[in-house]
Image 1 (tube, rainbow, N blue to C red):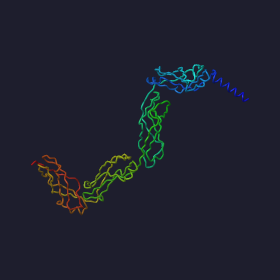
Image 2: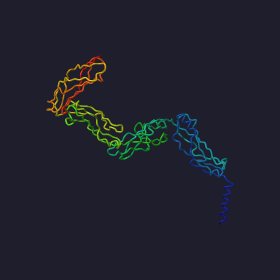
Image 3: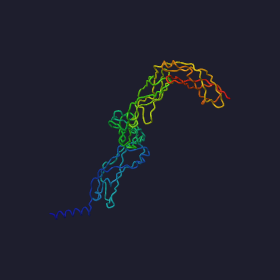
Image 4: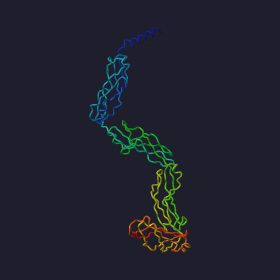
Length: 401
């Protein structure tokens, strides 16, 4: 029995290996390749609905040649270089064998093929550049705020069927993160949104990037009070003035390290010597470049009211001119000036006009003859419980020597 089996095997090997008889059989799942697509694209055309087809061939020939047939050694091609218009097409395909040198393809013959032709559609091709937008479906941690999305690339180039490409408005990146307390950075996919607001993910669309580098800054929020720096003057101190700031505070966002030392935002200085009774001032709200005014209020209103003090007006004739420009002489046209003083009632009553001196500094006066209005400084000598209130000027006559 063993001898019989060995003899049978030997005879089979002889028949297959030496005699190499004819045989037949199917070769399945042979992919169809389109050639001339570059010519098609140069005409603004492209193929859809047919790019991933396969065919089956029934082939006869020598056994060793049949065994060598596969998707690697059989090429199925359709030449589309002659097409000039969109439409539905059905063409026969070309079959070529790429067998190893040790195997002869001369005995091979195709007895049947399925399908007989390859059907496909040619459409017009379009290319557009669309913007990228972002949305957050998660949440930001309490006392934090998300900034604006940054993308790399900032836009996408899409290419495909004209009817499809022209429907797309933008690419939408969706960030799904919960309780974010720091800036997010990562590569994310996107979906296409049409001009009607619908989501669209068409097949066969070529894009310049499959993922988008997405950065979403996340900043800490902090409510910071607004303040002003009160400079005592005109007999008044911070104890004598009521200050109301509107708004009293603003919401600021920034990095934790930048927000930590920020205890207040100073709007500026207010010299009480220039405030008569009550006044309303406007100040811009300024922040460093690292911080953002989330509240959006660009200006604050400060209302001041000086209380508990008495004012009096004195006629002052002590006027002094200093630093007259070289080559010129100056004379005060104004001989007396009413000056207002302020302080506690008992202190104001004791002040006399002789204690007040008006000084006009002519160093920056215009070097021209004629009369000029010059701002002056008013000094109240020997008193720190009463002060001069307001701004003053006098008229000076300047002549050439």
